[in-house]
Length: 326
Image 1 (cartoon, rainbow, N blue to C red):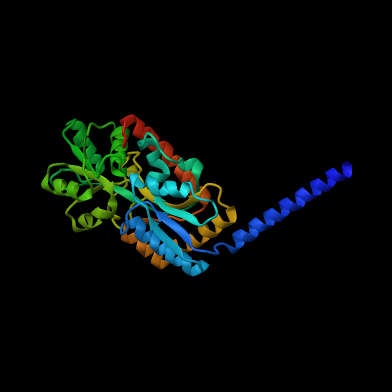
Image 2: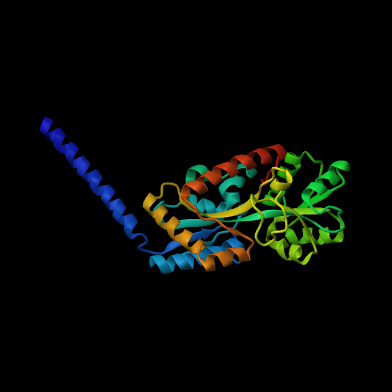
């Protein structure tokens, strides 16, 4: 009986070893068939264009096609949920943004997935900082002067944003809360109508991702009061950060590659290594700069940390401002 137990134990150990070796072999040979890269936003946007570059370069390097699959809806939740529920074998990935990865779980009452539990962080792709802009119609050359004007006339100075629940809206609430200033928030349906009203004098400022405003700032049509990144944005180096003006206001829209929870670490490491090479190539940097993005990169652990930090920060702001999208 004892010998039978020992034999069974030895057989189990050998089977476990064979399974582990087989898993390692699978990871080493991955991919052996096409990989689906889900973009949870419409074709043609910045996330989609960057995803197509990464997919093309990964396909060339790894010898299998990476197919971009646009699955828009619910602020990115629909496409990201498909990945969260996919098999964690490395053949379904997503290039998604900070909304589905951090903010949306607090904006929607019912979420079909939990990014902290149902996704595997792979690599940060890039970050687009926000900017606070005004025009010469507002006698303020920087954020410090603008806040001084607003404090002197509570409720008079209005700040537009691209829409309810957008990162611009969240950044506005963060600015209002952290500076303890009584602004009037005005949501729009996108950057363009907000810009029209700013140039016409209907509002005094806008807070939104910097991409659409770079030409306006560079041409002098708009004044950059502050960028909300840790460092000054390379495309508008003359615009100071909010932090260097004494205000704890940091906000950006960032995008990253992730997969379903439980992906084999060797596949995660292979993807992380190859995507970092794409991001740090001249072509990768140029493509990100085209959309006003700063190159990301780094380890899966760095992305995981970013997701947790951003999630906690925006949870507080969303709950304080009682923002809901459903």
